[in-house]
Length: 226
Ligand code: CO
View (tube, rainbow, N blue to C red):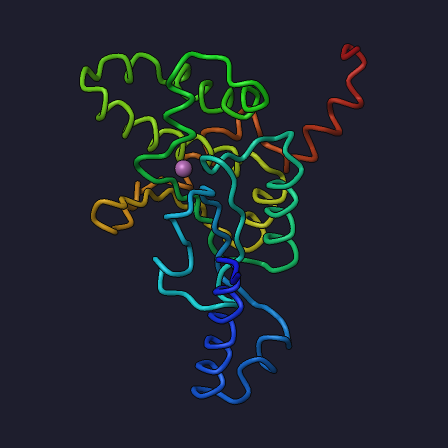
């Protein structure tokens, strides 16, 4: 009996033929190396296929996906991806893209024990706690859910901007710029939340400035500091 996954190999053969018809050198070029301009951090949701909805082709997008597009300081996977994208690939833009109808955000809105998922969802519950006043004031549950999706994107943009590699590259080169987007699968549209990158950076540097070496040196030399 033919297994359902066999269609993937058939699709793959068709895809290879299609690519070669358009450009016989396609795979030579692909194998030669990558130079993507964008790092995309999105949700694992099977309906949000990053390259397809953005009209980008292989080689144009460096991708990290996890449940509800979370950037957590203790998660080696996302932080390693960001560091590599910023320091080695020199991406010009970092996009944190959430989506309405996100199952992870919905689960985080529901107070219940979800076992191993608890620590992951806690990051999103923390977003709720940070913005509880605003969220609790929204009476309509769907509207509140949509707003938490947006705030989760904003807070994870801030988590990206907190990283030393992002701050250092931006100060040296004026890139990467961090963007917060939401994909609306009911319409297919990408909505730009118009995150003010410069303003956020200026704001958070009071606490999260990881580039000020003078401050670190004075701290070291300060005798009262013990
Ligand atoms: Co999702």
